[in-house]
Length: 619
Image (cartoon, rainbow, N blue to C red; front, side):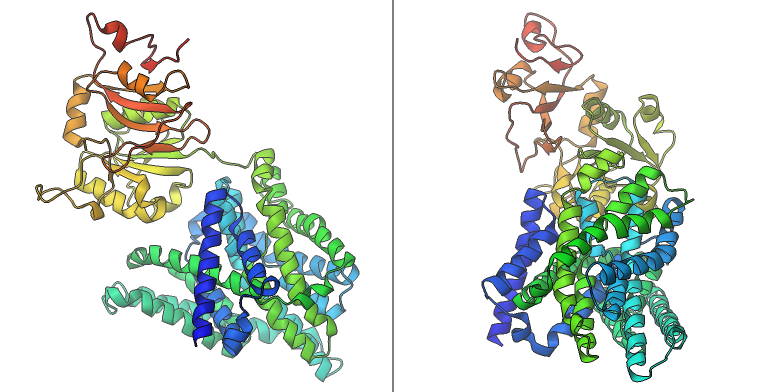
């Protein structure tokens, strides 16, 4: 009992610690988690998951993988297929068959695996895995269509790859029992089992979609009920056929995502947290379970197999599958390179390694070490090159942090114009076409629609925007917008006009219900509208070693208010608020909100060499 508690604590610390280091360094999180688990397990022997959890380890990992696939299914919306559907359907059908055949051929002829082991491993290699693809897409800004294709392929092909492995295993098991058995004796029952599992997942999704909005489940029980139903569907489907549960939970997630169940929006932050915890924990457990003797199967032949997998199997699968499709060639080449493997590959390989050994195939034990080698090789190769390849092929989106401005008002348009002039990605969102007229005339990117509408999440790509400023004329609405997007963009990255309430202000909203206050003074909507009518403007001032923040402050009118600074190298925006004051550095650009330039004897000081509202760098 005590040993298990210690192992759980260590797994949590290593997994979340690796995620944090990845966030700080920009390295692929999966690589760090695999390294942490491998060092803690077989290298230093800090703990052994199999010894600690025994027979519970396999079902723990299986249920974790099922929850991850369900969470991934919830992120798939059929509206994304308007742009990526052609590529997705081809990769989910032709791509699976080609990938299986080419992967099995490479395993048999290059890795020198026994034919049954090669065929089964080729089926497992069809998977790419949302646990690695989605973090890579999150860390590297890739254009919408190739990102959507990779995400759909990863989530849809995970259960498909598992079923391919099951078909191969059942066929060779039947051949071992009944020589002369044919594929047709195995495949039809498997297809029927997959259809039944998918139907079970769909019916479970319909039950949730019917009961939640009607109040049949209280709010505080919705998350526990949903998780319990997912696990129950997974376990019951596996009773029909091994690994059919993965099909069921994936179908359940995709079905729920497309049933417009509004009450599911409230569980989004929770499901994201669950996914992070599960991915971290499972990767640590699996890599710590690796045995040194499993690595004995890694030889020159398998090194050549890895090269074939990276440079022959994947490119041939993608390029042949997408022949004649609407996907441009540069995106096809990008998709042909990016195919990292993850949890599902390792989990399924470990399961079938034992089953193949029971059938008398000695190479079955090789699948454990080989699967880890594939995961490490593909994650390292793709994780550290995805930015370079995307930039080289022209499929990389804007990597500079963007500013999402909610509300088209004279003040917000002036702010958007100033940031747009600094090459910061900007988007102005408003539900009124008339109010957006100013943004259109200014040549600013805009979106006409209600930002709180669920359809906006699919019509407007929010990936480039790391900061949100809610600046409509309604402070309560601004607070609602900030509260809605705090879990997605970050509580510290959503801002609104007006300051939070305190004991002396009973009418203002509390901090927990609103965004961070813009300006240290906490200017409200009425304050900025009044000053804008008086001619106040935004000014940008670039700092240097000779012209520091103090000099910039002295060059501005005394009543000027600091709004934000923009880092020169990264484009990151840091706001001056009552709770935080960023530290200006040489090269930063400071944005201030200032009254009109003064007239009189001090004009030379107030406008010292300014041109177009910008303070100069000293000569």
